[in-house]
Length: 253
Ligand code: SF4
Image 1 (cartoon, rainbow, N blue to C red):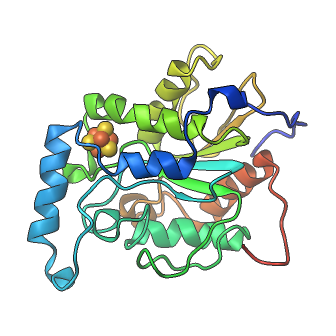
Image 2 (cartoon, rainbow, N blue to C red):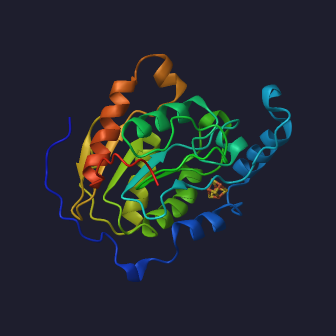
Image 3 (cartoon, rainbow, N blue to C red):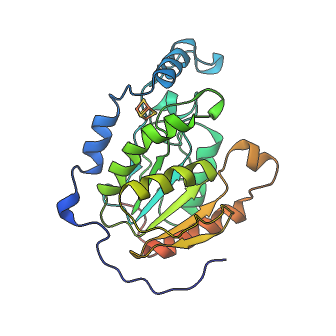
């Protein structure tokens, strides 16, 4: 699937350009109210709740990224699910997509457990940071282009706050489009025209980073067999390899 290539491991972004650490960006992000439609939706869902979660307090705010504060690999998804991350307050936590993603990361040796049920379940990631193109739950899982571009500012800041990342795993076309725009805004030299999205495709940037593309582990894809565990494992493995993350037998810190 992926082309073999030797990467020059050098800082991608000068430390002088780091405005915030990832935890600082996350702390600021949770107060964002820039998208009126999404603010209204995320908060309405948090009040109405799904019957099966009626005894739980929903997060109902922007969901920050989650993982290693100095990652080698970024994982970029679509947006929090209304009753998943919008409920638990942690990215990809509390829904079936998270089970797929963290299951794959666990099999690859970078997640401490396969399950991701709630924010205090003890899950840790090594060398990996999981985020999304849009940080607030959208109606029908469909952010608008304007919302994507508005929230792209946060993705840009997250990438800038992680100068040692070497690879980015994009889950789905929407995340890819958001990432492409954010990278362009950051002045990254990008191939033209933009490569087509396809599961398993890789894109090498001039600065040494590699983008790996995968179908999103949404139920729409996993229920239909469009994305299988083996396919996701292969994409995760390619991204981990490109990031220079070494397998360990000592577990996840
Ligand atoms: S989607 Fe992003 S930019 Fe819009 S309100 Fe949420 S955090 Fe802010």
